[in-house]
Amino acid sequence: MPSIAAPLAGFILAAGAILIAGSRLARIADALSLRLGLGAAFFGAVFLGAATSLPGLTASTLAAYRGSAELAVSNAVGGIAAQTLFLVFADIAYRRANLEHAAASLQNILYGTALMVMLALTMLARAGPDITIFAIHPVSFVLLGAYGFVVRLTDHAKSQPMWRPRQTDETKPENENGDRERHSTHMLWVGFAALAATTLAAGWAVAEIGTVFIERFGMSETAVGVFFIAVATSTPELVVTLAAVRRGAVRLAIGGILGGNAFDTLFIAASDIAYREGSIYHAMSARQEFWIAVAIAMAGLVILGMLARERHGPGNVGFEGVSIAALYAAGAWMSF
Image (spheres, helix red, strand yellow):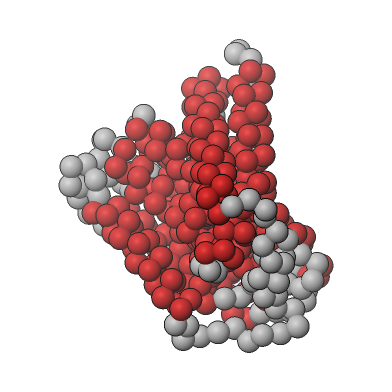
C-alpha cells in the first residue's frame, strides 16, 4: 500500500502557507477599506473575499479540467459550508456581544441573500434540461452576471441605504480602531496582491495533492472535496475572520465570509467552463446537491441572526451560531 506520509506532509505545508498569508490579509484589508472609503462590509466581500477564495477557485477549476466534476463541485460547496461554520468560531472569539448582532449591516444581509439565490440557481440548473453552449450551461453565465449585479447593488446600498440596523451599545462603528498601517496605500495594494498570489499558488498545490489522495488511496471525491481540499483552501477565511474580529472589524469579518461565499459560487461556473464533457451541473451527484442545500440553510441562519440580532446567548453565541454548528455536524455525520 502506498505511503500517505509524503502527500500528507505536502498537504500540511501548502495549508500552512495559506494560513500564514491569510493572517496578514485582514490587517491590510481593514486599512484599505478605511483609506478608500468603501466600507468594511463591501471591501471584505469584494476584495478580501475574492482574494482568500483564490486557493479554492484554483482547486475546483483544475479538478473540473481533469474531468473530476464531483471533486470540483464538492470543493466549492464544501468551502462555502466550512467558511460559514467559521463564523461560529469568530462569534466565540468576539466576547463583546453576539457577532451577528454587532455586525448587522444592509450590505452583509444583501450578500447573504445573494448567496442563497446563487446556490439555488445551481440546483435549478441540475433539475432542468441538460442544455449547453460550447459545453457550458447557460446558468454559468447567469451566475457571473448575478455576482456583478450584487456587487453593484451593495455599492449603491452603501451610498443610498434604504434600511439601517438599529444602533445599540454592542454595535461597533467600522472605523473605531482607525488606520494603524504606516505603509502607503500603493504599498498596501502591492502587499495585498503578493499575499493573494501566495494563497493562489498554495491552492494549486492543495488541488494537486487532493488528486493524489483520490488516485492512490481510493478516497471518494466528495469526502476529499468537502472535508480536505475545501477546509484546507478555506483556512485564509478562518484566519482573516478571527484576525478581523480581534481588531474589532466585525463587519469586515462577516462581509468577508458572506461576500467570499457569494464569490465562491462562481467556482461552479468556472468549473463548468473548464469541464469539457458537458454541463457540470448534470455531472454532479446527489451528494453535492445535499451540501448545496446545507450551504443554503447555513446562509439563511446567518441572515436570520443579523435580522433578529440576539444580543447575548450562551458564550455570546446566538441561536444562529448553535444551529449552524449543529447543521454542519449533522451533514458531516450523514456524509460518512
